[in-house]
Length: 268
Image (cartoon, rainbow, N blue to C red; front, side, top):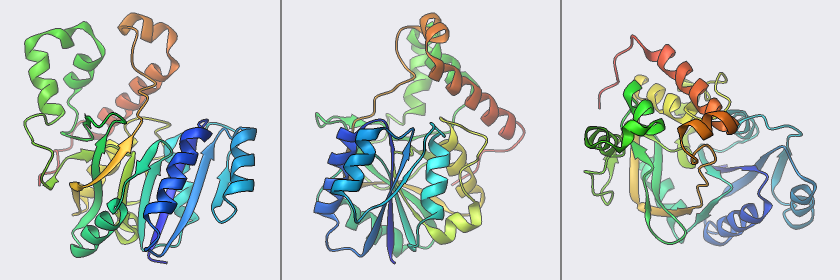
């Protein structure tokens, strides 16, 4: 099999249906297998998959096992030479899969490639970034982010000085839509199982660079992404007190910085 398309989902059958239908519509000329890995599977999701998508390999989990665990299961169950990983809230557009597949096949140094992501209203979503500094987390999570010096740093982190219209090597890509080579994954390894959610994509991209593979933002391919930002909103105090995902994000950041504290940032 040339391409395995792995779709991860968590409690959102409506968006998952749109995602799967878009894949079926716009990947029809490509030899691929389609795999759905679902966390904390709901009855309506399982019924939808069993009744309407019998050709799809479906792997439900009773519990919320985390993003990296879903990716791991999908890759382990796949057979393709290339791996397209999509969140269930991604909508594929015409030719996007074909363009990504063609580009990664052209250059064996590219281990991971991501498309331009747009919100449903057509506005750009920032999905390629510089590596985090510790201060980045502080600025993003506290009132300090309102100051000019912090905004300058966050603009750098989000790569706002880049036009997002030309191909570019980047530090890391949002894990919502990625194509990878199986050869690279076998060398680099799977996502770090120590992350339940958040920062696993940052960590993975860093390891790709450390192993000699390029991580590439490829805006000639475009997809739409809902991107709910479940850990954001409500102010820092309210978020810390009431939003469990904020704490998940913080603990993931702690793990990341402990892991790379004395290691140089890979150059490209």
